[in-house]
Length: 475
Image 1 (cartoon, rainbow, N blue to C red):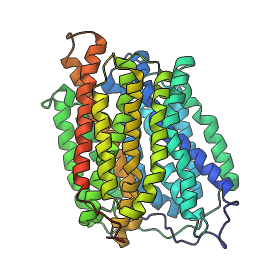
Image 2 (image 1 turned 90 degrees about the vertical axis):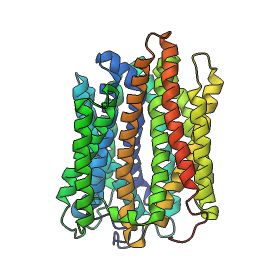
Image 3 (image 1 turned 135 degrees about the horizontal axis):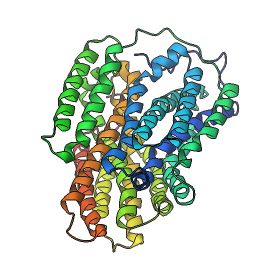
Image 4 (image 1 turned 180 degrees about the vertical axis):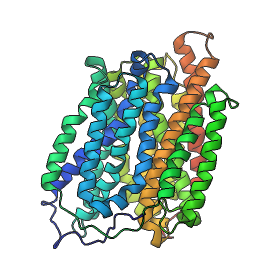
């Protein structure tokens, strides 16, 4: 698979910072919309369960299906951009995401909503990697860091605004509106993009890895489904069947990728021990991030009784903490490397998860908010440096493949986190049924589930001790 080349000829002469503002607006609109939707659904889950008369295990697939669809198309981003042009693919992706949003708005059952969320994910999965690659190529020489920092600000705010906006709409309108609002925004983004995005020169691309395209979704979806069914017992047919199908597909996928000259995902990069340790630590951080963003809204609504809008507001300090800390750790990474940043960040995150696990129906709001802020500080401390570290330690001839690989696998980690933690939560809730009030039962279930996230974060902190202490070129 080809990736979007960073050094390909784009324009006859470099663009100035002023001249790239209009195309950046189109890119920001598309990326902001997609990232916002990745967290907007978290506060909607209790309402969706009620409106569709469904269950947690069914509704969580509206989240899992979305991220799995993204993981299926992210590896294609570079190949499609080179083959058909970045501008065309970016605009088609926004249009597909908007069409999926309109379908979600009219969904009449949870099954329809899951299906339409998958359509959303197929479009949204291409928007972010193509958008960042487009931004990189638009940036004037010597100004890449400045432009990327400018782009990162709204991208970090989107996950926080999603729950607030979604919560307000649920309380004052209906959950349907969080999808409908994407349609006019998407149309505006496409129109601005048609007018302002430049046409980037297409490139010759190798044959697409068809085997990888088929096996990857089968493996990831089957394993995620099996994880979601564990609550019904390890010996259930669905669990065993999912594990067998997913396991076989995964082994075949790995074998096929290692033999293919231009694989869908460049797994040879794992031959680098530094890269392997770095991405494992990144996975633990991503599990903690997206697992927490999925669980905390459920805790606030089911155990504490906050409304959807109040839940979104309580989550807002998390994003503020992340956005503040990331500005500091970005500079620290250049000076001290990744080891102590990752150890510190994941240790703080683990302690925050422990504090959240101790939240009861009587815990004060100030303590809840403090725990959420602490979580934001810990995860904000290490997420961006861990991503940057992967680029530093990857073998130079494979650096171009790292973004596609890490983005695709991130979506898989997110799907596993949502499916696994949802299963753990509902299973524990059922175990404690009849042992007290509903709030007490939820408290016990969340205590158990957040301890799982804490353990994952601790594992990441321990592995971080083996990462490079200082920046050492590309080692």
